[in-house]
Length: 70
Image 1 (cartoon, rainbow, N blue to C red):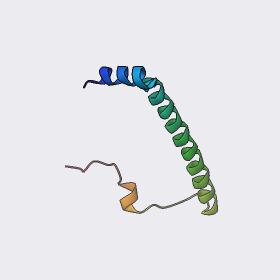
Image 2 (cartoon, rainbow, N blue to C red; image 1 turned 180 degrees about the vertical axis):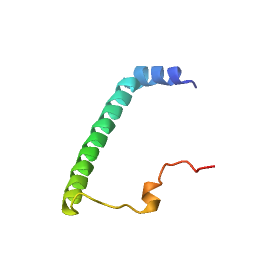
Image 3 (spheres, one colour; image 1 turned 45 degrees about the vertical axis):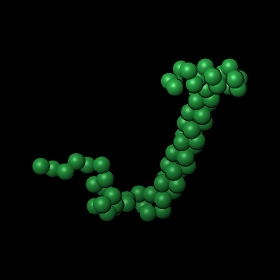
Image 4 (cartoon, rainbow, N blue to C red; image 1 turned 90 degrees about the vertical axis):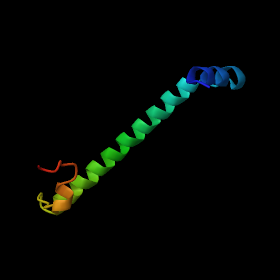
């Protein structure tokens, strides 16, 4: 079955609007992610203040996401 057919069946048989549920879940996840970012930022700020504002990270952390040089 294709997507539109399944959405139609959910709406007609169960009375469930799939698009509305997906939007609610997406919004909930975005709010939770934003809350986690705020908490992590606050804990990182406290950590930096405890260390005097300078933290030297190991090479394996600083190279995360960098492309290999040819």
